[in-house]
Length: 473
Ligand code: AMP
Ligand code: ZN
Image 1 (cartoon, rainbow, N blue to C red):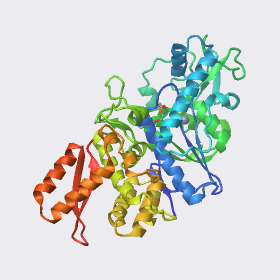
Image 2 (image 1 turned 60 degrees about the vertical axis):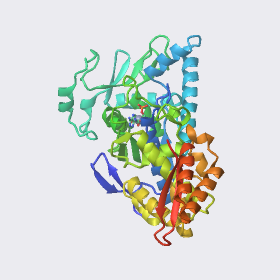
Image 3 (image 1 turned 180 degrees about the horizontal axis):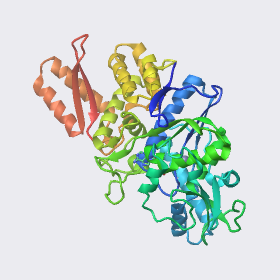
Image 4 (image 1 turned 30 degrees about the vertical axis):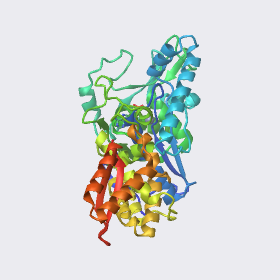
């Protein structure tokens, strides 16, 4: 099966061929752990988990190495740790905060059906690799030490700006930030900086006597090289990371290792906004994964993690996505139907070939979903379709043999007795059959009062009316 992926670096869709099919390597920038992850952060996690699943299928489950880091050194982390654990020493406070936040992240995303990556390195456990990379960059004349910082000299790299498609001149012209006096050029960026009193610090690269800490970009360059080698297959993250983060990762890795690429394919997911607006704390529409799973803040109900995942995969990963209550209701309705059709069914050994072909075309999940909807249409009458439906849903990570009731989390839903609902639904169908419309309307009203909405459809083959039901949001 041929996989094609859109490459930000070349700005086109390309046939993907791993450098080594025995060891297909992907790096994705992970979270900075100081607070709950928001639903925008869930997008790259879900998207690249889906690609991970697809590559494991194509190349073999033990042939794919997926590294997703945890950034546990950062200004926001230091500030939050000092605020939350004022009585602990800075290192201990930071470790406690980052341990707790990382554990929360793992638990939130596992509810989204996300597989653990092959390795999940923490920045603070790879400081020595970062220091070595700083030293290598200085000795190769791509970086310099000034005022206890190590800075990357962007003028030393001929094609700096290639990923974000901007020339150094353009960037310099657009640079509005006040430029620190110790920088040689306005776009030079920090590889290492001195730690302030009360912040965690480590022995610095050569030529710096005070303790310091790494900049954000160098973390990913060092951890990617440690686990995937100096040149690897795929590097991913959200579109906001193209510049400066990924541009700078490329500069450090290529200049530090003397290679002409860092990753061969660069993939970026589009941004998520909420009900038509950019998500932000000040607008009050900032929503965490955990709130969606565990509280009734969004749409006055809790949402099942697989509903969130299905809602996320309904849009192609490169498009922007609008996160709305309506989208979640639709995803849940679809999953309730799927659960009806697939619960307890034996899954086929492979998903539908057209479904796999859709995913292999730059992870076209909307097209994969339309294959799934087609299978669902025939699954009631056709066992083979039901089995393919189940394995395709499983493959996407949106369904794992849950019963319909499990997806129906949320306000009214918890109270409903589904056996009673089923009995009333059949009684209503029987009443309709004998043309007792008064009784069938009465039963419909009784169900509506329980919060149950009915959907009647004609089976095209038999002409019979088939009724499905769902709980109103
Ligand atoms: P951060 O913790 O901000 O570095 O973000 C972690 C990951 O989430 C990065 O890959 C970001 O690009 C991604 N991300 C952050 N906000 C959004 C958003 N609103 N939509 C999609 N991806 C996002
Ligand atoms: Zn990164």
